[in-house]
Length: 247
Image (cartoon, rainbow, N blue to C red; front, side, top):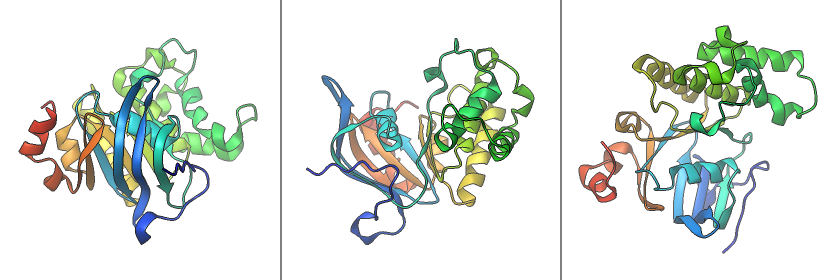
């Protein structure tokens, strides 16, 4: 099986479809001694929101990691349409509270791939960071330590870091889990605006209401893709009961 992992050089869409931002075929991935994803064939439509849905352990985070390029697949083919490298926003619990970083320093990390780790940020870089923090409503938290922030504040800072990468492919792992209604609404509104601007958004979520409002859905169960397409066709009571999706 051919393996293609080309995050930085665009590859043509598969099967002549020009509407896919990402396409994967026969994708396997996991960890030493623990396979997670098994023979996934799927697509991520461009300039749309795709929800990854499934119970814990179904492979949602692993699939995001493979698309982001931080987890290596063991076999299969993965193709990207033209665009910038993905911006990946992990679950907020994946970022250590003990890291001695301010909120602004955290967002500035989003410019590292563009600028390099040891080079000073330019005026343009600082403007990008300012814009991302303003858009997420966290500019007033710039000097606060990341570990001091509330869950909602922390998650908005991490999403601002993703925005600072200025990618047209934004990957988010459970972006609204554990947040209060106001924080969830702010993030949902932002993602809608980003898609309207041409960004492709992929989010892993347990929130069925959020998944049903997405443009497309990938339903995972035990590391396999058991459904994909419009949410109203994928998230049926029968399909959800088969994978034991939490309410």
